[in-house]
Image (cartoon, rainbow, N blue to C red; front, side):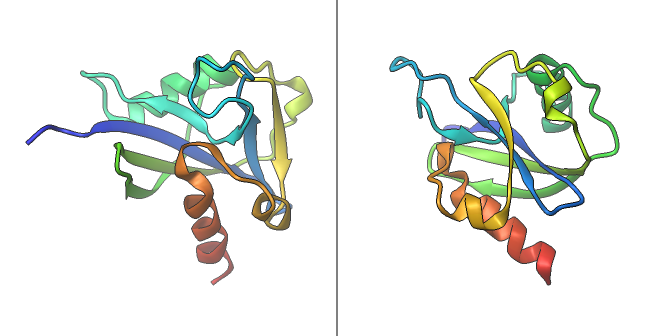
Length: 133
Protein backbone atom coordinates (compact mmCIF):
# COMPACT_ATOMS: atom_id res chain seq x y z
CA UNK A 1 0.00 0.00 0.00
CA UNK A 2 1.50 3.32 -0.98
CA UNK A 3 1.83 5.98 1.63
CA UNK A 4 -0.13 9.09 0.89
CA UNK A 5 1.68 12.36 0.59
CA UNK A 6 1.45 14.53 3.65
CA UNK A 7 0.59 18.19 3.59
CA UNK A 8 0.42 20.76 6.33
CA UNK A 9 -1.48 24.00 6.50
CA UNK A 10 -2.42 26.55 9.08
CA UNK A 11 -5.55 28.50 9.80
CA UNK A 12 -4.45 31.84 11.21
CA UNK A 13 -7.45 33.60 12.76
CA UNK A 14 -7.69 36.96 14.46
CA UNK A 15 -9.80 38.74 17.08
CA UNK A 16 -12.34 39.66 14.41
CA UNK A 17 -12.98 35.99 13.56
CA UNK A 18 -11.28 36.36 10.22
CA UNK A 19 -9.11 33.73 8.59
CA UNK A 20 -5.91 34.53 6.70
CA UNK A 21 -5.69 33.29 3.11
CA UNK A 22 -3.24 33.91 0.32
CA UNK A 23 -3.98 34.22 -3.37
CA UNK A 24 -2.02 31.70 -5.40
CA UNK A 25 0.02 32.84 -8.37
CA UNK A 26 -1.85 33.05 -11.65
CA UNK A 27 0.40 30.64 -13.53
CA UNK A 28 -1.12 27.79 -15.47
CA UNK A 29 1.74 25.45 -14.58
CA UNK A 30 0.78 25.34 -10.89
CA UNK A 31 -2.21 23.56 -9.38
CA UNK A 32 -5.15 25.81 -8.46
CA UNK A 33 -3.82 28.98 -10.11
CA UNK A 34 -5.28 32.30 -8.96
CA UNK A 35 -7.27 30.73 -6.12
CA UNK A 36 -7.30 31.55 -2.43
CA UNK A 37 -5.51 29.04 -0.23
CA UNK A 38 -4.25 28.39 3.28
CA UNK A 39 -0.56 28.87 3.97
CA UNK A 40 1.41 25.64 4.19
CA UNK A 41 2.94 23.02 1.97
CA UNK A 42 4.25 19.49 1.56
CA UNK A 43 5.80 17.61 4.44
CA UNK A 44 9.29 16.50 3.44
CA UNK A 45 10.65 13.04 4.07
CA UNK A 46 12.49 13.51 7.35
CA UNK A 47 10.14 16.12 8.73
CA UNK A 48 7.24 16.08 11.15
CA UNK A 49 4.11 18.04 10.19
CA UNK A 50 4.97 20.47 13.02
CA UNK A 51 8.45 21.07 11.63
CA UNK A 52 6.94 21.46 8.18
CA UNK A 53 4.47 24.18 9.12
CA UNK A 54 7.18 26.11 10.99
CA UNK A 55 9.46 25.91 7.94
CA UNK A 56 6.71 26.80 5.45
CA UNK A 57 5.56 29.85 7.43
CA UNK A 58 9.15 31.03 7.71
CA UNK A 59 9.55 30.59 3.94
CA UNK A 60 6.20 32.08 2.93
CA UNK A 61 5.77 35.07 5.25
CA UNK A 62 9.05 35.14 7.20
CA UNK A 63 7.72 34.77 10.72
CA UNK A 64 8.76 32.36 13.45
CA UNK A 65 5.71 30.26 14.18
CA UNK A 66 5.24 29.47 17.87
CA UNK A 67 2.43 28.36 20.19
CA UNK A 68 0.25 26.86 17.52
CA UNK A 69 -1.94 23.81 17.93
CA UNK A 70 -3.01 20.91 15.77
CA UNK A 71 -6.60 21.25 14.66
CA UNK A 72 -7.23 18.09 12.69
CA UNK A 73 -5.85 15.61 10.22
CA UNK A 74 -7.94 15.57 7.07
CA UNK A 75 -7.86 12.64 4.71
CA UNK A 76 -8.01 13.87 1.12
CA UNK A 77 -7.87 11.63 -1.95
CA UNK A 78 -4.39 12.82 -2.77
CA UNK A 79 -2.91 13.46 0.65
CA UNK A 80 -3.16 13.49 4.38
CA UNK A 81 -3.42 17.10 5.51
CA UNK A 82 -2.28 18.21 8.96
CA UNK A 83 -4.16 21.40 9.74
CA UNK A 84 -2.90 23.67 12.49
CA UNK A 85 -4.44 26.67 14.22
CA UNK A 86 -3.03 29.87 15.58
CA UNK A 87 -4.82 32.92 16.86
CA UNK A 88 -2.83 35.97 15.92
CA UNK A 89 -3.51 39.54 14.84
CA UNK A 90 -0.98 39.82 12.05
CA UNK A 91 -0.58 43.12 10.26
CA UNK A 92 -0.53 41.76 6.74
CA UNK A 93 0.72 45.07 5.36
CA UNK A 94 3.98 44.42 7.19
CA UNK A 95 4.39 40.85 5.95
CA UNK A 96 6.27 39.95 2.84
CA UNK A 97 4.61 37.12 0.96
CA UNK A 98 7.27 35.13 -0.92
CA UNK A 99 4.91 33.07 -3.04
CA UNK A 100 1.48 33.98 -4.30
CA UNK A 101 -0.02 37.36 -5.11
CA UNK A 102 -1.40 38.67 -1.83
CA UNK A 103 -2.53 37.96 1.71
CA UNK A 104 -5.97 38.87 2.95
CA UNK A 105 -8.13 38.40 6.04
CA UNK A 106 -11.56 36.94 5.30
CA UNK A 107 -14.75 36.74 7.33
CA UNK A 108 -16.80 33.57 7.39
CA UNK A 109 -19.36 35.09 4.99
CA UNK A 110 -16.72 36.19 2.51
CA UNK A 111 -15.05 32.77 2.55
CA UNK A 112 -18.41 31.15 1.76
CA UNK A 113 -18.40 33.01 -1.55
CA UNK A 114 -14.98 31.69 -2.55
CA UNK A 115 -13.87 28.38 -3.90
CA UNK A 116 -10.65 27.57 -2.08
CA UNK A 117 -7.67 25.71 -3.49
CA UNK A 118 -6.66 22.17 -2.50
CA UNK A 119 -10.04 21.16 -1.13
CA UNK A 120 -9.86 23.55 1.82
CA UNK A 121 -13.47 24.81 1.54
CA UNK A 122 -14.75 22.16 3.91
CA UNK A 123 -11.82 22.48 6.30
CA UNK A 124 -12.34 26.21 6.75
CA UNK A 125 -16.11 25.88 7.00
CA UNK A 126 -15.72 23.26 9.69
CA UNK A 127 -13.27 25.47 11.53
CA UNK A 128 -15.89 28.23 11.74
CA UNK A 129 -18.53 25.74 12.86
CA UNK A 130 -16.28 24.27 15.54
CA UNK A 131 -15.28 27.72 16.71
CA UNK A 132 -18.83 28.91 17.11
CA UNK A 133 -19.89 25.94 19.22
